[in-house]
Image 1 (cartoon, rainbow, N blue to C red):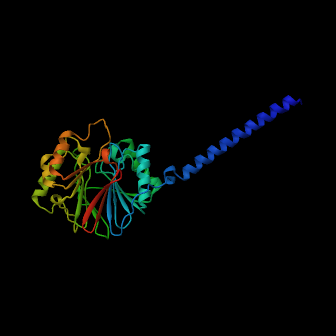
Image 2 (image 1 turned 30 degrees about the vertical axis):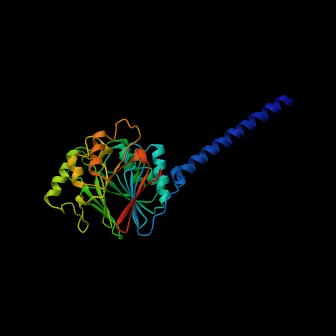
Image 3 (image 1 turned 30 degrees about the horizontal axis):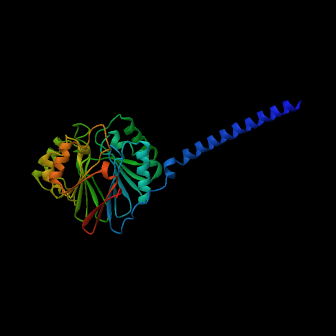
Length: 321
């Protein structure tokens, strides 16, 4: 065999070895990320530590979507909605939760819209999830279907979240569901879960995506009896709300005059994305909120927001500070 032929054969063998090595590497990486999901490897954000006996509520910046994390004094967390599931928003939620160092998660999808339920699916990859609370209305939306599949694959129990369901902790912190009623079928937004979070006399209302029509209905029901939404030993006092997570991203169809006057919150928080295509929040809603709340925070301007509750008082910090 000539020297040229030997050299050519050697090049062919080396090329085959290189291709085989690359194939082995690809297969190894594929197997690795199959058994060790990418998001479980993400580093946590550097966040201020929670004090002993403190409850914190985190309003996360997930663009034009919702994600609220209730960090209980016991060290576990309730995640209410998870944004739209886009790569950047899902990564932010995972890294944020890792930064908190939470031990277990309870998940709530207030309703089936992608900007609320879309990002919860990825949390099964990186955390121990105890329970998934699902909305009263089902949906064929792909994001919502994937969420239920992820819960089934992780062998996580599910419950339908309706009025009088309560998530409570030994510290005295609790989250009570005010809306919807179990038989409601009046559209996805108005059957979204409105949650009342309370600890040491500080009360926070998470308005989900309800419209002014549902706000007025809740007011009429509350007028019948102050304790109509109480969950056993856990009181719900809508006229004593300190902090309001504004309904439906501050849309013109929510946050009606009567509702804001009735709640009279000290602080209002609007979850909306910068330059979003819906024009949220509407100028009308912003003007109404300015009349009935002492402080107004917009996530598109402030970024992530932390409400700290301890000793019967609260403080607010924005992570853009």
